Image (cartoon, rainbow, N blue to C red; front, top):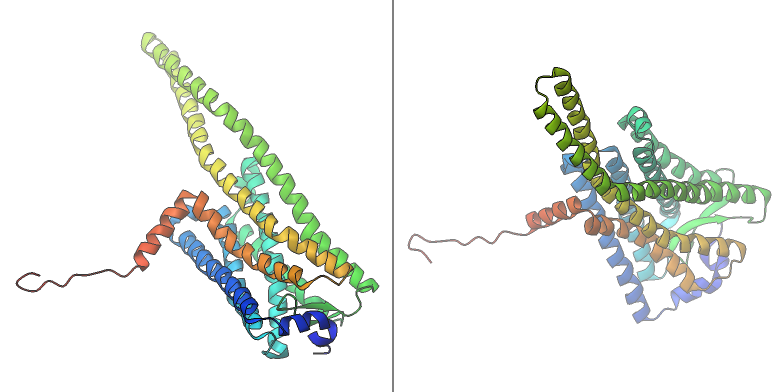
Amino acid sequence: MNSTEAELWPNLYIELRSRGLTTIVFESTLIILINISALVGNFFTCWVIYKDERLHTITYGYIGALAMSDLLYACLVNPLIDASLVTGEWNLGKTACQVQAVLCIAFAWNSLHLMTLISVNRYFRVIRSEVYRRRFSWKLTAFLIGASLFCAVFSSSFPYFPGWCEYVFQPGKAVCFMHIYDRYSSENRFFTLIMTVVYVIIPIIVISFCYARVFRVVKVQQKNLIRNLNRIHITSTLDNTRNVTTNEHASSITEGSVGSNTNACALAQLCRNPEEIRLNRVLLVLVLGCAICWLPVIIIEIIDTLIGSLPRAAHVLYTYLGSLSGAVNPLVYGIMNRKFRKEMLRLLRMCRPNKRTIVGPYGN
């Protein structure tokens, strides 16, 4: 490396190296628990989506991609963080540090963009359903998921090639990260501005707009649901009565049949709304959980870029919240989504060893 963590962050380096045994055990155990939760939860999420054909929809395709991104983060990034927290230094060399830094940034940005794609999907599914049926296909979904990952990897690795940055172990965060050589240069300011707009401002605006519109419509649907159901019931009853009392008029019978079919279609549409409403609520809680984890991370990163003198506790919180975001999503699915909860419990029962009693020829 062109620079070392001891040269760039001498105080943070000394604090990391001089921790007591209690602090080392606490910090390492906490990141291990977070990582185990993320590994198990996201694996089950991917498995449930794969096994349950009812979840083979475009929306759950995005959810599966998000779970896979968080699973890869838990597999490839978090174990190295834990190793650094245990040893108090980076022992895996320059190449591994560069790979971890790129993956850490790429998976974080990819998750934020996937959350944005989920909100856009919900907007068109609820607000503009005709456009959704015509335009939103599996081919487009796969393209957008792939484009999100490609852009995240490209953006996290591109600054290295013009010589704008290096990837170095950051002792405060206990993770390899991007270090800009000249943070006040015009190139760095331009890059920082573009990344802030693309990966922070635009996602926040899009997510806020989409879910505000979606839940405004959902609120109206909930208010009108019972009234519409009662209206359909009354209309259907009147149609049936008219058909019975005017059997001699074939035109009346035909009219009643058309009315009944129309009402049946409307009733079927209304019956689908509760499931859509529940899914919208799950995804909203998902976004809120993501925001609770990532907004402090973004604030810490901005303050650290502008001031550069945050205490180690802020950097450690940064690392924990970034890792925790990948463990929160499966909890939301399991708690709020009945399909996920039932399938996860079924898989857990399958994983338990069966206790078999061996009975001899004369009984026990």
